[in-house]
Length: 241
Image (cartoon, rainbow, N blue to C red; front, side, top):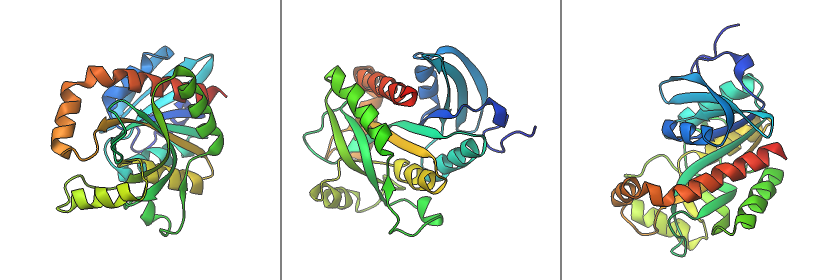
């Protein structure tokens, strides 16, 4: 059996249930909440492990930064038999009430990225699977952790000259946060007839300079691990429902 071209593992190694994340290092932190984790390998930004949660086989795959690489991962995972995929990622807040470490359960995403537009026109909505949304919300609400439910915006660059104006525009329209992958995954996942959802941990305060925010995140990452751990637990809960 030939290997998946970019993921560089065998299709029969991929479980029907998948957790996606951007950062390859997060794969190992997710492994900490699984039983019997086994590394499948790493090629470029794609790091994969297999494990179990409550007896259910689960594959974890990193996608790197941006929608283009995220969709490559999704396409190859779906070709290998993945049917339910949840992104556990990070986002920058677009509302001032959101604290660092707060979680966003995504209802839908503004498609300001290019990967999904290579597949479908902008009129096609990027919506998360409703059953997965409910399961994520139930688990997070039971924990009492601060969380939000609504729209995010996915884009392709932090470094536009008009970045602050763009953020203000979507802030005024009630969008909760911004990331770079969710819209691509929701759109192409729906096109491929699989279930996709996303839960994001806020790592940049609204109005904060992005470079400073990313630096602050790197220096205080331990303080936000509680949010990430809960996001992982919620994703695992949703996958076994």
